[in-house]
Length: 230
Picture (cartoon, rainbow, N blue to C red):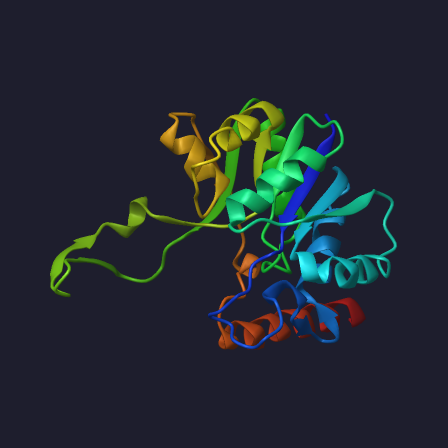
């Protein structure tokens, strides 16, 4: 079953700060986007990649991608006003594929085994698959006035990551309503009653959202480089 990967990379990333779009911020001389693309094609099951980029950055993104020696086709489309719009634009451009992954450009170091785990679960029959890790913080449910309503039972909670995997049919179903928006595509399918399977994610699949996350990402990269030298 062929596997296409969509990487929505058109967001501005206000919480990270700076004028540069988040996907084009650098870690050790390479953009988050380049790290993320390399992470996805490291999983040999991925057969094509489509990136949704800001219109004003398409040429820059194409230049970045030209530096990647890949055995799979990588293309760029113009992103939309929202994540869902960007994924929808990219989905129209993917080659024929039975499975589609959607991966955050801001998760540069997802291990290849997580990508393979998601793909394997879709191949085994799940229409939608989300990698996730247990929540370790104590979570409080609060009201509008800031008062604690109750402490949430964290054993039942998971922090969702990407890549999220879908059958092409399920993803098309999620994107069919052009008025619907969500922070992830699995959420759209949940609303439609489509079962979503959770598989084990990884702590290194952290998302770069705030300036401190860049420091953590740098540390992950340095550790990996050190491990390769040993």
